[in-house]
Length: 90
Image (cartoon, rainbow, N blue to C red; front, top):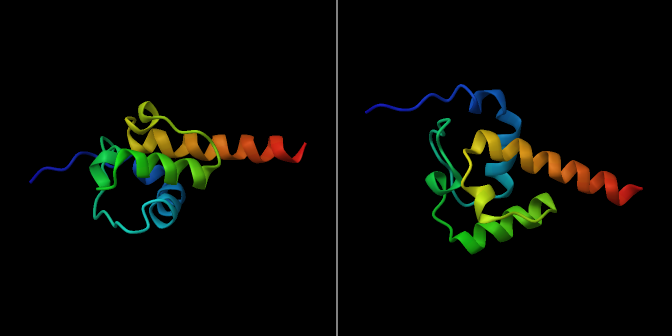
């Protein structure tokens, strides 16, 4: 069995760990390659995933967002949360 590279995912271990613990808390993927999207690691419905991501990161999340590879999506969600938190403090 061949696996895709996980070079990009290995660059964001803290973001990935946080995501799996707080958003996909009821699922535990064994391997997440660079090509993996949320649909590759979760059995939840699109509605449930949108709700979980939006609630946890405190920002709106679209289906188009979730189509991205996780190594791209997770830093974006984290940055959006920081912008939202920073704006709330002003």
